[in-house]
Structure formats: C-alpha cells, structure tokens
Length: 332
Image 1 (cartoon, rainbow, N blue to C red):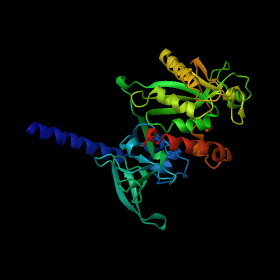
Image 2: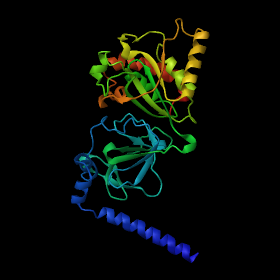
Image 3: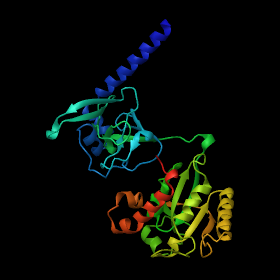
C-alpha cells in the first residue's frame, strides 16, 4: 500500500509539473507551434466567425483535443447540433480537463472555458443546451484537433463508392447514417487522371460524380446502404437525375470486393423482379479502380450553403424526405 501511495503521488506530481511546464511556455513558443489563426483564438482569446469552423458539422467518431497541447476535452458522443454557428458539446471528459472562469469582456458576463493543461482559450460555457445536461460548451473549431476512433480488426471499416446524381445531395444523406464513418465527394469511373469539376461536367472524362463511403459493417450493412441508395435517386433513368443530364450523373455502384458485387446484383435483380420501379434499373455495377477527391468547396456543400437556391429547392426536400423515412438509421 505504501508503494502504491508513492506511485500515485509520483504520477500526480508528474501531471502537475507537466501542466505547469505547458503554462510556462512563452509566446514565442506558441507562435512557432500554432498557425496565426490558432494563435489568435487560443492565446489572444479571439473568436472565429460563425458557421466557418471545420468541426461545426463534423460527425466522425473520436476524441476532440486541445489544438495547443493535445489535452483530451470532448468525445463525439458529447457533440450536438445547437445551430449557434460553433461546435457544441453538452459535457466534457472528466478529470479537470477544462478550467472555467468569469469573463466580463464586451459588456457581458460569461463563463470562459480554457484548457486546464496549457491555458488555451476554447470558447464559453452556457446553460441553454437542448440535451439532458442543459449545458452548451460553445467551442471554436480552431481551438480543437481531432483524433479519429480507430476501427479494430474485428470491426474493420469497409468502403463502397456510389454514384446517384449530384454528389452534393448524396453526400448529405449518407453522412447522416449511423455506422457511416466518412463520406467524401469525388469522381470515379473515367479515364482522365485527377479531373477537375469543370472537366467532369463536360462529360468527356467518363467520370461519374460519386461519394466514397467508409462504413462499419458491424453497425450498418451494405444491404441497408444500398437500400438507401436506391431510395434517394431514380436508378431507371440513363445518365440523368431530374434536370441534371449527362454521363457524370449516371447511377453507378463501384464495388470494392466480389461480395459487394454479388450483393449489389442480387438487390438489383430482386427490385426488377418485384417491379418496384416502373422501368428496369440501369444502375452500372463496375469494379472500383480509382477515386479522385473533388475540390474542397464541394465537400459538405449542403451544410455550408443551405441558403443557396439549389440547396433549398432541390437538396432540402430530398433530405427532409430521407430523414423522415429513415429516422431509425440516423446518427444520434
């Protein structure tokens, strides 16, 4: 017992010394370690513009850390959509990770939250949260880094690449499914290397607009993913989805394994046999070769541009119809 007590004392002292060391770092150190934008937020208590942070609509599983020192602050399960313009969490990881203090700046009385390890400014804490805790940790994305949850061998992630018309809409839908780890918009199925969006739109590259999906098969099956796929677009129109016309808008499944090919073909045969659609399915089922990520402004397009006419008139109705039909499959 004496040895255990000495060990615990040693660990606590080491932890306290580490925190003191981090807080004693001078500003030259932080300016060399952080980007100017991060320095403005973390060290000068700045605030990023609302609805601009990269973690605002972030949905991957993992741990959010202090961008300054790596101190673990929140998990994905603590994150919720508060519609305030900044990433929001309803609680923090236990263990004194975050320090709270009264902030009287800008003529307001608020509770500032800082990293207990390095003193970096994170944001503010409010008691207007909409979850059971009633709390809202309003945090700047630039104050955070993210460590993605590692998928174990037993739950090795799978990939499937799907084309169902404009990838803006398809990405928005699939990223809401529980078990889907990531969704990236891009191009597949063509011959041009590293095509641009402008080139793909000509129809001359042979590429389809696709979403590259990584998913946990222990949480969501390929059958369920393809069920959603055949529900949210018309697989019977050749090289067309609504007013979007061209080979780049074709219905396509680019399978990564032979098992995926068999599953996709069986589903198509079943849908055709049962005459679920008035016309035969023309979905292309092709072996995956290469995926080219689309330009950054295409990623998470709907969430970042909801006021755009195309988003309001075309994507929003599809998303609302999808969420109503598949509520039981959505991420909590």
